[in-house]
Every structure is written in C-alpha cells, then in structure tokens.
Length: 303
Length: 326
Image (cartoon, rainbow over all chains, first blue to last red; front, side, top):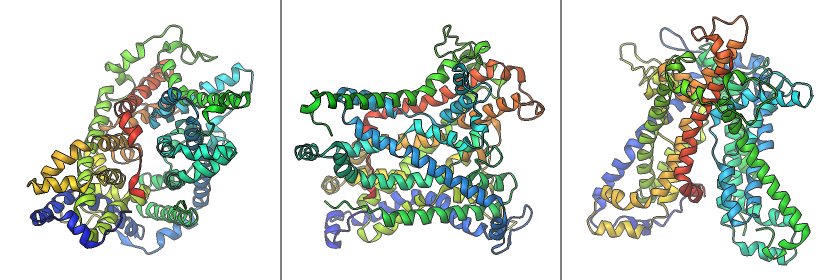
C-alpha cells in the first residue's frame, strides 16, 4: 500500500501554484473512462451476482424472488459434495506437486555460471500456450493412439487408461502443470535482488546449503511466495479448461470440478439461479481460505 | 550463490553441481518435449501418424498438412478457413489491449501522481477490489449483462436492450478493466520522481502534455510487461468465448482448437456420426490427416505467445516486480 504522507507535504509536492484548478479537471479526465468500464463490467455484475442467486430466472417475464430456494436445492443435490471433493483434490494435487518447482528452480539457477543462467532462463521460462499444451497432452494420453501408451507398449508394459481411468484421471490432469511452470520469473527477480554478501558471510560461518536456503533465500522470498500462493489457490479452485477439455468431467464424475458444474448448470440447463448459488458457495470457500492464509502467513520480514 | 566460487574444485561440490545441472536440463527437456512432439507429428506423413512404436525423429518431414490447413483445405475440418480464426484471435486480443491498456495506464497514473492522499485509498480500492473477486462468481451476471445490456435482469419490458452476444464486443468489453494491470502500472509510475513532473508544470505544460511527453517515453518497460500479460491472458482465454460465442466464424483459435479436437474424438466413436462432425469428412479426421492437422494448429496457436516473449523478453526479465503489493 502507498505511504500516506502528511497532507501539507503532499499538497506542496503535488499541487504547485497555478496548476491546481486544471489539475482537478484532468484527474477526472484521466480516471473517468477507466472508472466507467470498471463500474459497468466489474462492480455492477458483481453485485447482481449476489441478487441472481436469490431469484428464479424466467425465460419470459421478470425473474421471481425465491429467497434461499436456490441454495437449498443445491445443497440437496448429490453432485455438490462430489464437486467440492474433486475441486479440493485437484487444488491440493496441483499446488502440492507444482508450486514448489519454480521456487526451487529459481534458487538452483543462481548456482550456474552466468552463461548457463542466460540460456537456461530462456529455455525454462519460454511460455507455452496453455490451450495448445492441454490439447497436445490430451492426445499424448489417448488410449489407442497416444504417445504414452505407445511408449509403454514398446517397452512391453501393459497399457494404462490414463484419462479414462478414474483412479489416475485427476493426476493426469495435474501433470501438464508440472511442465508448464509459468511464474518462475517473479522468483528470479526477487532472488537476484538478495545481496551476495549475505551468502558469503553465512558460508564463512559454516552454514550448510540447506541452512542458507532456509535462513536467507526463503525468508526474502516469503512475500512473493505468499502472494503467489494466494493466486495459486484462487486459480486452482477455479480450474476449468484442463478438466473441461481433457476429460469433460469424466469418467463418470471423477473430474467434475466446481466451475464446470456452474457452467453446466447455467448454460446447459439454463438454471441461472442455481448456478449463481453455486458460484457464491465457491466464492465463500475461496474468501475463507484467503482470510485464513493472510492470518497465518506473516508478510512482514523482520530484518 | 549458495556455493562459493572458491570451493568449486572439490569433488563433492562438483558432484552436487553436476546433479543440479542435470536436474535443470531434465526440466528443460520435459518443458519443451510436448511441443517438440507436436511438431514431429505435424510433419509426419498422415499415413504414418498413428504408427507404433512412436517415431520421434520423422525421417521424411512432410509439410503437406501445413499446406492443407493454410489453404481452403481447412474447411475439411472446420466450417471456416484457418485464417478466419487467426484473424478473430488477433481482433479480440488487439481490441482488449487497445482499450484496456490506455485506460488502466491513465487511472494508475492519476492514482500514483494526481489524486490527493485523502481520496487515494478509496479510489485505489474501487479499482483493485475487482481483482479479489473470483471471475467464476460473475460469469452468469456478465453473460446476462451482455445479453440484456444495460440490464442484467431483463429490466422494464418497454425499454430497449442491446444484445452483445455473438460479437467481438462480447469478448472485448468485459476485459477492458484489470486491477492487475493497474498494479503493474502504478508500481512503475511510483518510481518516477515528482520533481520531474513539477518542473514541467512550472514551465506551463498541461497534465495531458506531461503524461504524453514525459511519462510515456519513460514507461516503455512497464507498457511492454502489461502488454505481454494482457496478451497471454486474452490469447488463451477459453471459458469466456465458449460462453458468449456460438457462431463458428467468430471463434478465436483457442475455441476452434477445442472444437477441432472434440470433433476428432467423436469421429472415433461409433454411432455418433450425426454429432458435431456431421459435415466433416469423418475419414479425413480418422486417418492421420486430422491428427497431424490438430498438432499443426496447436503449434500455430502457440507461436504468437512465443513471439511476444521474444519481443518483450528484456523488459519482462527486468520488469517483473509487483511493487504495488507492498
């Protein structure tokens, strides 16, 4: 957050003689276009999202108020516990398996010589289009023609069902995340800002590699890690493309996740009210997790 | 540097370093392998595409499939030729960038330099608050807003509403604001010294003139970074186009790839001939053509993302620091 200067200083600094009146006008000119789109496409739908959840949407005529009707019908739906379980399973698997990789790589990359770092940073962080990766991996998983079964067969091993096998389908969905590692650059930028003397001193005092990582690198990465963790939780609980494209929620309901259920309630069954109620439940879950996380992960680094 | 330069000759340290290097190279290989594989498949002659064991190094690279999909032959798989989808993707991404970035830059600039401390916090929250609400919450209300613009819940019967669905605007408009872009911009504008701006003010420059002549030339790095993030985000946008676009000729590449592979899947399933693939020649999909074409399209879809990275790489490497958060 921005430092709040004492008012007089701020005034002296910002509003010099002469320009004040025009400046007020230009603030409006600068802010209004952005404010209008944020209001119309940001806040307005957000507030209505809460309203729709308490209404029954009618194709003809105005919507009817039905109080908590949508919520009670969603809570009685046997799909809800399945969807919650799947969503959390996915998020846990995905964060557990993939979150640490970019951090580890960022720390290890610094050990390489300057030349290697340059090349490797390039190769590691070349962005791969997520849509293309998902589709390519889906066809690598294909039971009859896919590469993975092809490899298994050529080694004389039994074929696997991959995405068709309810036991490992979710694991297969998470794997693309293992090879896509996008956010590593943020960690690199932070690590490069750590003064080298810290490591040299620690080494002179006989600290091991792990101690150096634990006591020097990680504490300085903590604000970034904590922010990335929040973002990872938010985005993983809202995962849609991976399961929708790769499995369509199957086999059975083994990979049906929250946003997919919202989508199918809303746009396959046109039950906008029920879908909104689902979305609010998801929103509450995410909000609770963020609050818990902010409570437990201290952001301030005590120097 | 965890391991100091001097100790690097010892054999134990050397083994650790070799281990680290091997691990990092393994990661690079895993990272790039799917795309290598897609490229290898796309240049395999269609008749060999499904052959097992897999052929990692196609001995007779054959660019037939690229010629097919760039020509009118693509209508064998999808309703419109490939360039239509490419054009759609560029129009939508370009539209989002062209509208969102100037608007958000101006907002961030006035947040950083113009608005007095008293109002700053509340204006900041107004713009950033949208960022912390998950997008899935507003899917339905955004859809209804675009359907019955400017109402969400149909509104008074006699008042005319405008239907934005099935147009480029349906994808562009909801993406015209972004708290994330404001944060990135503001983080940069905060580092521009006030003295510089005040000096220009004393010389009688207008606020817009100051922004254009002084701030913009300084801000190349941050504009590149925001451009890059916005581009990546909107290029791979899948859920939103899926909801608001039903007409095939408006679909972006990301949605088209999904449809293409779904069509291939149904073409393998017996008894679903009347499904999505009703007009496509099932045989063309079933034989290697569909597979190689799908991989070629995936490669084509990934190229702009890669190009953006190359164009903006220096700025991205330098500029990825989210200062606004602290």
